[in-house]
Image (cartoon, rainbow, N blue to C red; front, side):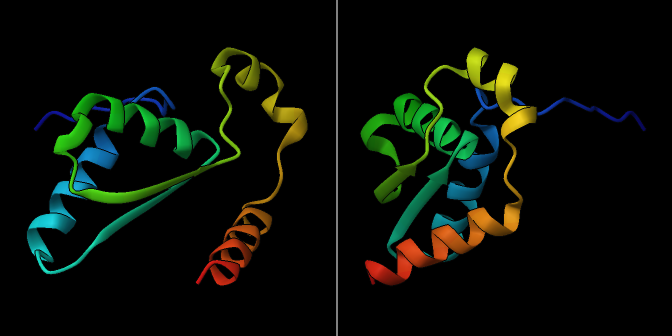
Length: 98
């Protein structure tokens, strides 16, 4: 048994692709919407650029997208906000646009 390990990169869209394929196959009756926050927004944008109009996603929102990943990576440790704050902010946005 061999294990493969890879580090996180916001320039990778494999996880999003896998999730979209799984959800769209297992819930064929559902409309698929996606929200990307921060590095997740970068990953979502990259995924959409790769699959173009073939995506099963109907609507997308990308929030707080770091467009310069090199600069964002360099400055990230001094600007980390706890995940709870991101989650609360995203919930507020979703509630406001319900």
